[in-house]
Amino acid sequence: MIVNDLAAKRRRIEQLLDDEHAYPTGNLDHIAAKILEKRGAILDVAAGRATPFYLYDREYFRSALAEFVAAFGAHLPGHRPFYAVKSNPHPGVIEEAVRHGFGLYVSSGRELRQGLAIPGCPILFSGPAKLLEELHLAVLHADRVIVNIDSFRELERLGELAARLGRSIRAGVRVPVEHHSAWSKFGIPLAELPRFWRAAREHPLVELQGIQLHLSSHRDLAAYEGIIEQLGRFLERELTAEERASIAFVDVGGGYWPHRVEGYSPELHPLGKVIRAADAHYGQDTEFAQAYYLRESFPLEEYARALGGAIDLHLRPLLDCVYYTEPGRIVSTYAMHIVLTVMDKKSEDLVIVDGGVTMVGAPRYLHTYCPVINLSRPAMREIPVRIGGSLCDSEDFWGFRCYGERIEEGDVLIVPLQGAYTFCLAQDFVRPIPPVVELDHPGDERARGPG
Ligand SMILES: Cc1ncc(COP(=O)(O)O)c(C=O)c1O
Image 1 (cartoon, rainbow, N blue to C red):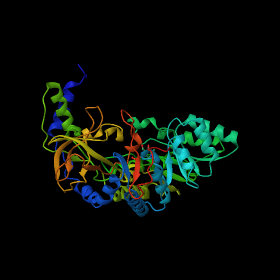
Image 2: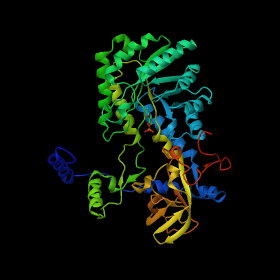
Image 3: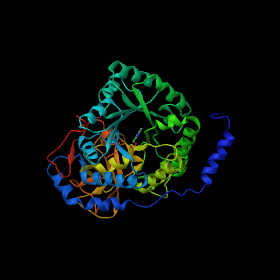
Image 4: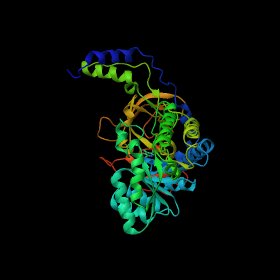
């Protein structure tokens, strides 16, 4: 028996099958319409060079940065954003974020060095297992680096290092907000916070002054309020007034998902997963009623309002501090598109393009839907066509539909809004990683990565 309580599991599965499942449906026409406004400029760039490439769209990225600042500025006044470098570490992207007044949130020595290369840019350094040389570098630049400490052991390391170097460093401590998931590997349990605060006194050169919570993403905005409330109640109960007064910042992290930019196939729907598992077991196939559902998320304004409201209610009465955010995907998604050319039309419903999905790290488009647009034969309707990539790999598909009149060999396709956790996860399996080309400065081609 695979579980002890099989009867209970059977009831749970039946409940899942019976439940109403109101998952969002609709289309992503707005993305295609907006990209088609830039069609001429993108085709000009593609005409002058070999595809595939990542297309850095500075204008889109700027609007995303501006939108973030406006929404959080309105609902979390005085907040300070730190761009999450890990989500897209392209130098041009980082420079633009800094130009918009963002600091940088870095999580490795490599990213820290990237940030330090930008004069005057404030940096938050967090993440597990920081190396001694990384902490060393942070202490040497303590005027603009804050370290979010991940454990009691790291506090000791940082304290010893600061004492050896005779320099003080500002620090926060990370507390996980979900204790039973993979996220619990980060930071120290909330219950340990008072002990941590007191342990930090043993290290006078570590100026412990902040708390980092990465809120991550939730299907329900009330979850954000619940987490902030939980923190507020805890701080009120368990820290002394003097300790609370030493809190200079609360860092609420990132995890805000862009709204209406992708969908997912019914196979990722809980019900679809059950049906697919049964199909696979009995060697059958199911045709689902929907081609895809839209990925659940909230307009940026709603994230900001929910968080700002919760902070006003549960933290501002207790703490006189500033609030940091660490947005990654909510801004970097908009920074890049992927440009491809059709190399081969094998049949009316199958084309092969010159780039593989290793450009985004993994074969994510088997189950994730992103619009693909034929710039050479534009139309605001999708035709069914399997778009295979250039790799000798059966999972290498970009999608199963394409905006366009039709699709032919030599057509230039674009997969828009692919800036987050795609470019930085690219692999050079079989083929080299393509370059990044900037839409407004196509002559300034750069290799992927921080160099
Ligand atoms: C601590 C922390 N802050 C910010 C981020 C950025 O998250 P996102 O790109 O979802 O905004 C991450 C991502 O994993 C993170 O771990």
